[in-house]
Length: 526
Ligand code: MEZ
Image (tube, rainbow, N blue to C red; front, side, top):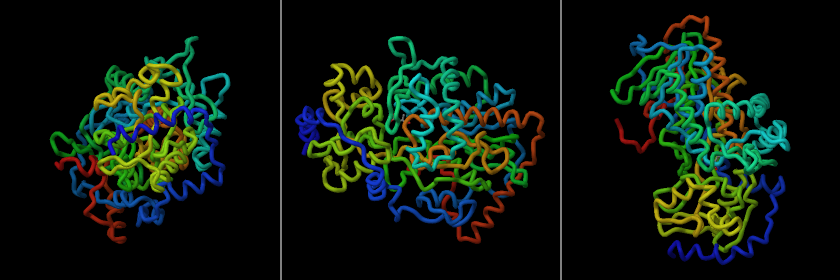
């Protein structure tokens, strides 16, 4: 059936649905639902890691292959450095820019290297806001408890305490740099409620919050004249032979040659992993999200944590085909948008945590209550026109201009017609284990933002990623700069890689997988 014919059920059932309140699931029902339908629980998708710091632990096959993969750097590479820095930041998204700015402000000579352009990152994809306890009714303690509950109590308490307590100072810093957040009628920061949160706590810049933050951070990196290496992908770390990180080997993607950067400390801010398309899922992530930092840190001997859990954002676009996997912000559900199955029924409290909402969408589709497109994809409806019906014509366009435009480009008016959605691979809940200053198990190797792990437990709450990357970008940048002030540059060796290769050989590691991946598997080969 044509998509417009299928949409009619949403319009027909709207008035009836508006009278309903859908209760949240009991803890036991949530657990049962997640265990049965969440992709994290599909055993066949997982296998144990054969060797290295996380040997024997389970992760998805796509990531296990990369962690055990072969470095593109040969043992006899000439390690004479072309560049020298106090602090090398790898990654040009929010975490990387925040780390570089704070390291620079603390007096370090900083190089920021990024494999695409400055700003190309998942930060710009974060639409619906940033959680910070800024209102009189809210507090960092409440933020802590909400996040802990959302993370299934598996969050690292010290990281979480640090993040929620530093939130308000981050908001101030961003405002001082010129980020334009939404305000209410009294001029205070306007706050919205996100899934799994007990208080309205999301500060927003319309539905392009991450993009607005990145606009300002990018400008500031340029204003401060921080040295940039664009189209320059880190592919291997360097060590002094005693486990301390001393720089990185980069791939100059324009000239197809290796570059050696000597640095007294390295901050990996390489972002997420969506472009591995774990379990065949589409993704909301940017083109460079291939988990590079995880493989490099792993070879260096840094432990990873929670790498068996990923976030599948409930609302990835299913139609039109050009937008498959693209994010349809949770903000629309926060403002009252209903999720509706093929029978016109609601089936979950739309503001439950993401793992619960995604599992319930998958359940609807697997049990035959999903909507199938002509190309064979399946999803459920997000009733977007409801916002205009409830809050007056023009609401959707006013509150979600980026979302309206994203669909308008394909001739779809989401204020008139509902959107077909299905979970999309959005975030890696885990990553490299860090302490509260962002330092990994390997000395002078720091990790900030999505590449790090522990803070979010087994399920991240909406809006906590933007705060995470600002707080730990800042802390890693400042700590690294202060640490290296009086230090001498250490030796540049690949001894950690030689050890790793020996272990790989012992355990039957495959040399056919080159890691890090740098660009998605479907990118044009060099
Ligand atoms: O934190 C996020 O993932 C986020 C804000 C996403 C969204 O739905 O807008």
